[in-house]
Image 1: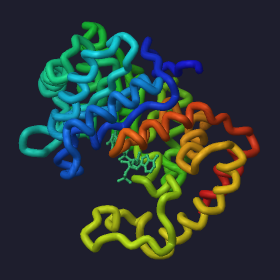
Image 2: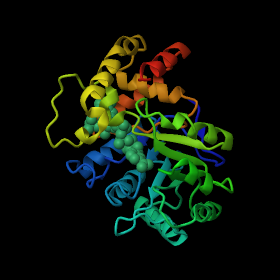
Image 3: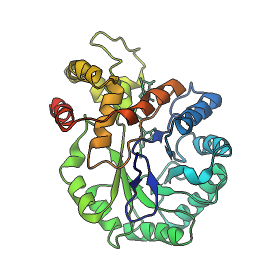
Length: 308
Ligand SMILES: NC(=O)c1ccc[n+]([C@@H]2O[C@H](COP(=O)([O-])OP(=O)(O)OC[C@H]3O[C@@H](n4cnc5c(N)ncnc54)[C@H](OP(=O)(O)O)[C@@H]3O)[C@@H](O)[C@H]2O)c1
């Protein structure tokens, strides 16, 4: 399998990576223990996945620390480590050059490494000039501390402002078969600028794995119920659409999750897809999507099925 290049950088990764917001992410998912987190990372690296997407915000550094512990048992040069920062101590976003430079140093320590393959500004702040923030990352790239420059959760206008000197290699945004705004204006800009794209929430927090039914009962305090995709008629339409793809999945010798992950891998706008996981078994299952090669017709069929 060929590796994909990130923007103008020398970073390359296979088209399926691992999202690690549940690894050490005690602030996001309180019931996950560190050992399971490490097993999730090992499962990914042992099944041929070579990109790990983490952030300071996942467990306030804990995700990076656990990944750092696991990385000691692997060839660092073969793993693409992507991390992000912007959350200041008081919870506000900070993109000042001082903050970002310090955040990179802190991430390097937690990950026990001397370079980051990709560093993203996790969220824009309201005051730092965007080109100044990205300029600081460009300097860190020249210094060899990071190998590729990324931004996440920037509007298109903020992105254009941030990329005025052409320093951005990769953008990470919410994009899935159920959330397709990026197709209108963002993707044409990224293509024109040679910027890579990593979508987050590709499985729509599990909804696109086919494990939910029309009569699935969620506990009243289940955080998924806050997500509009899990509510009312929209939920039903999504479940019916996912169910309608079962025979196509079977014909491709795939589960629904593998079929839809293969759709992202064939999508010309997507560089690497990074499904998250709460159990190592889910990682092993998702990694098999790398064996699924969709025909153009099947790709178009899935593409159309979710245009509602
Ligand atoms: N840049 C940003 O601001 C940002 C924001 C959000 C996420 N991210 C990144 O994007 C990654 C992906 O997002 P995400 O993990 O939140 O959502 P996701 O990839 O859409 O969904 C992952 C969830 O789906 C379920 N799942 C995964 N594989 C499965 C399988 N084979 N069978 C059944 N269920 C399965 C698991 O949850 P359950 O077991 O609970 O169902 C898993 O935690 C994150 O890990 C993170 O690295 C970035």
